[in-house]
Image 1: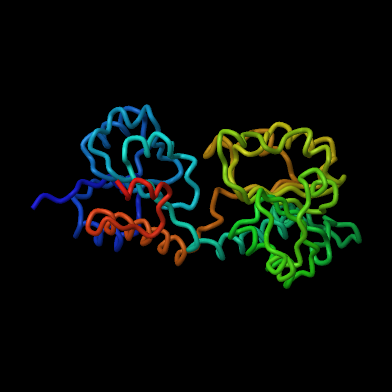
Image 2: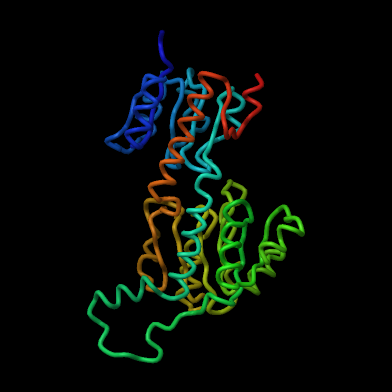
Length: 327
């Protein structure tokens, strides 16, 4: 019996790769050679499925070369690398990996808030450079996190997990902005209150983005939004780089209007805006919010579950376009 052909776009856990080989003819990219449009479309041209990450684009241009493709399983929770409309029109199922990374990513969100407010990266660079020569009352003074006000833009699973930690662990006041307001019971449990975006920006000491990206939300936060924030406030992006006008962010930091920023995502990643690289009061991490071994393995296994479930039982755990399954 011929097995369905699966392209694994990036290196994954060996045990998951072996598991997939029991169900698919696996073509893997363990060498992690970067794809070009030509090599990516050629690799997918005779495949039935693909296991993808955020860098692996599935859009109309790609799909014109992939007549056999039936499913793409993202090993991430985001799916802005997928053109869901085009995939659905062609009857191609898309899946992602929500839930399994929520707690780990929320931990990292708090870590970025703390590192930014307390100038931890800047302090380490200062120490390593041999600049620490004496105690001073104002040495690398930052902003308190406990008792301060946190504005959360995007109150899904991860936003709520961050709010829970911030409210119960640090006694922070929580303001959030979301398209759909939470129930009064959930708000009360998180110590959270809904506010329009402009109000949230004006009142918060720390603002964190935890919302999905779409072309409509490109540069959702720009010069106008940064100007509304408190002088000395901190900005954290845990979501997607394209949500933020990074030059406007650099301007707000250079002018001194913002006190600092913590970024795990970038518009042109893995390239980082060089203006941000030059600024001391910016904490920069390489898109690792979900990167604990246990969580990344769970993400990988869920993607594998979806692939196997679709081809063997026509069922998946986390479909993005479930209408495809009804056809």
